[in-house]
Length: 103
Image (cartoon, rainbow, N blue to C red):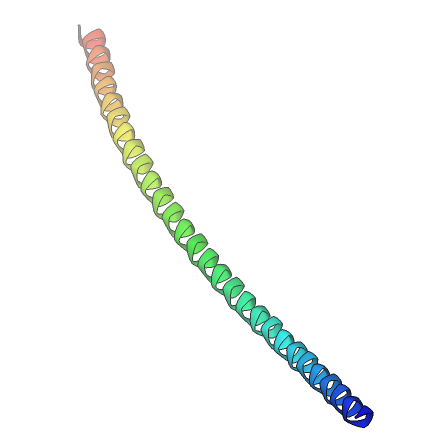
């Protein structure tokens, strides 16, 4: 009877050790899977952030280009107006000089 009890205790201890080892292995596997998932999520977020940054860069470049074109058009218009005014003033000056000289 004592031997049978000792054998059952020993068997119970072995089963407990096996269950503990199984639990450790399962926990290690879960941790490893969680790490892999975290790495995948991080890589996805980095990829998303890079794509968003590239989109923002493209939008900023497009906006800057549009603003440059608008400024160039505005300056060209102002230059044309100034040139026209200068030609008119030149004609007035020429007419004034001719009238002054020719009377």
